[in-house]
Length: 355
Image 1 (cartoon, rainbow, N blue to C red):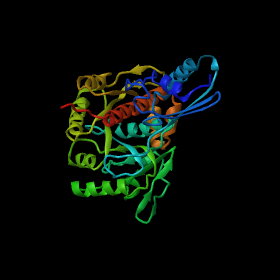
Image 2 (cartoon, one colour; image 1 turned 135 degrees about the vertical axis):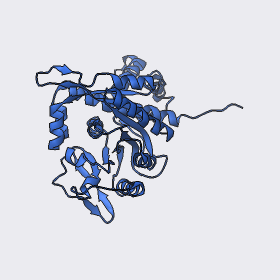
Image 3 (cartoon, one colour; image 1 turned 90 degrees about the vertical axis):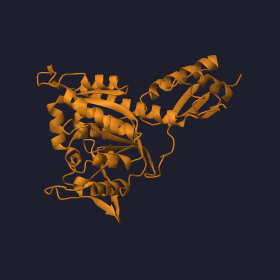
């Protein structure tokens, strides 16, 4: 008996999205099924190409199909796609998800985490942009090695720098690096909006935005200008950093922006001999996330090579320090993609009211 498309679709009803806890058919993730003799091709739509669960979904789908067709021994091909760009506000056409990275205070490594999240998502297969929105202290130009590159504009539209597999833009390349940027709130808001909206980002799965630290009027107004899918809070383990991080969480919550994760940076220090030291304690940010019932993306250590790579503008070298650090960065990016996917899927679920 020939293999039927209906049999394949029914088999996929047994395959559950690990995060959303529903089957692929019910979620509308099965975009097409093609059967040509013994060849079966299935296209599944993921929220993002960086979905950390796609390998598991592929394996589960292949097993379900093989079980359904019995002794037919088909050639099974599972392909993935992602939905076209949509935004609740038509501010950034072509950009699927805008994620802000904030911190309650400076000096916790917010720009480092922004860079590593962008690179991690890119390594996972997503198209990523990185915007340096820290208008008072832009540092991504140095971290990304942009010192010898000049900004390019087509008319009044900026062309982002194409570096390290991502697109990037920083106000640090548009102002005199020797002059302080003494801007009041409205001036800062206008400059940030122009940088955001007048950059040709093209098609992106994610735009990571490095916000200024703190919870004052500038980060508040900048966050309000963005069509955010969510915010990441960067915190170090010690209590004083947690107190400020809690205020940053509350700021985003008051704006109606979901917190998609907390990152504990500088969770421990790795010495040259490989010995780990808890300079600031360990686990404080994770406990804060648990107490506030928000996702914890993971910890990242303090390592001298990461500082050296930031100064040298070679961020991809962070993936060559050690297997543990590479795994930690990839885990942060994977968890971010997972949390964004969960929230996007939840927002798209129909609400049924019974009267």
